[in-house]
Length: 212
Image 1 (spheres, rainbow, N blue to C red):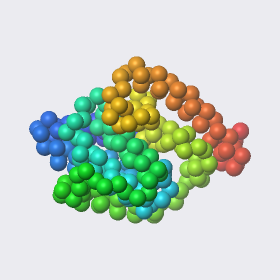
Image 2: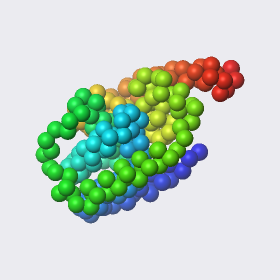
Image 3: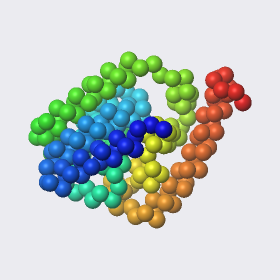
Image 4: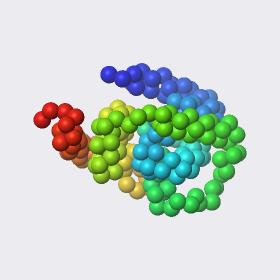
């Protein structure tokens, strides 16, 4: 078992404490410190383009800074951040050139600097790591199945949060999905996840990485 649950609980407490004190800059910075690296890696995996991923991550950080005051805590801060990142990545795929910003990220001061540092440090880490052969096989799956595997296996996110992250529609409606709606979607994602695992296992057997 990884240490994700313990780390996440401590991080969530720090983020929420800052939020409840009204220190939104500290809440945003704490969230980026806790989850920025893994979220940037998630964006890179979706886009397969480091330059575009850096632009998308900057947009994500801006969305985070702009939206945190209205965060309702109907999911974890981590789950909400992944939801914002997935939507930012989808925008990046649709339109490579960044749209005009409503609130310049530069006005966030240290938050902007932190977002850039997260990008730079995580990019170095990703470029210095050798991709495992299993990860390379996973890249052969459809993007949706790759995302399911990453969120569930690598990030150990709960199914209801995965359902919210992957939900269709504008972010304003996604954050308001109720538990029953999320349960229905989570059940569908679980079925596809099992199929994705079976596909990946078959690829691994064919590549001689595991026995049949």
